[in-house]
Length: 283
Ligand SMILES: Nc1ncnc2c1ncn2[C@@H]1O[C@H](COP(=O)(O)OP(=O)(O)OP(=O)(O)O)[C@@H](O)[C@H]1O
Ligand SMILES: CC(C)(CO)[C@@H](O)C(=O)[O-]
Ligand code: BAL
Image 1 (cartoon, rainbow, N blue to C red):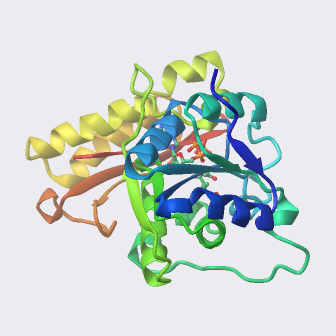
Image 2 (cartoon, rainbow, N blue to C red):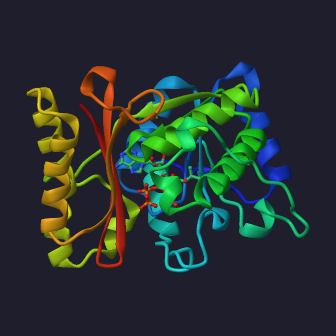
C-alpha cells in the first residue's frame, strides 16, 4: 500500500515541505485543482510526474473566482476520496489551505489579466472569473515556486490567461497544457458533471458532438459562420441555454473570420438546467 502524501495547510509549513522536496535540486511540478478529483485531474498528475521528480497538488476551492450567484457553497468537496486518489498516484505533497490561510484578514491585492486571451468567452459571462483565477494562481506559484505547472486544456482560455500571467510577471514557471480527458461518449470530465440529472447526463455529450460537427464542416470548406451555426443549432435543439459557441485563433484566442486565419479552436459554454458546462476542441 502507498503512503499518504504529506498534507500542509499553512504557508510556513508549505515552504518547509517544498524546501525538503527540493533537496538535491529536484524539479517540482504543481497541479492546481479545486478537488473533487476525476481522471482528468489524474492525467495532469501523471504528466506532472513525467516533467518533474516531485509533484505537488493543490486543492483549494477559490472563493474569489465565483460570483455570489454561483456555486461556491455547493461545489463538490470530496476530501477523503481525493486523498486516496493522490496516494495511489504517489503524489509528494498536497497543499490544502483554508480560505483564511490563502486570504488572511486585510488581504487587498488582485491580479487583473488583460489582453486578447481575456477578451470575451468566459470573461463575458463570468467577468469576476479571471481576476480570481489569476490572483490565486499567482499566489500558488509564489507559494510553491514550482518549475512547471500543469493545467487542463478543458479550461482552454484559463490555460492561455495563466500562461500569459506567468510570462508577464516573470514568475519563472513553465506552464504546460494537458489534453482533455473525456467519458466514453465524448463528455469532457468535469467536477460539475455530478450536478447533472440522469436525463441531462444523456444530453450532455451533445456539446462535443456539436463541436465535432462544426469542425467537420469547417474542414470541408464550409463558410465559418454557417459551420458554427450548425453546431449552435444542435446545442439549442438539445435543450441547452447557450452562452457562446465560437471559433477563435488557437494560440491568441483572437476572433477569426475564416479557417485560413487559424489554427482554429472551437470553444463552447452552455447551461443544461442549472449546470454550466464548458468544452473546446481543435479543428
Ligand atoms: N477532463 C479534463 N481533462 C483534463 N484536464 C482537466 C479536465 N477537467 C479539469 N481539468 C483540469 O484540472 C484542473 C483543475 O480543474 P478543476 O478542479 O476546476 O476541475 P474541473 O473538473 O474543471 O471542475 P469544474 O467543474 O469546476 O470546471 C484545471 O487545470 C482543469 O483544466
Ligand atoms: C486553476 C484553478 C485551480 C484556480 O482556482 C481553478 O480555476 C481550476 O481548478 O481550474
Ligand atoms: N475549472 C474552472 C474552475 C471554475 O469553473 O471555477
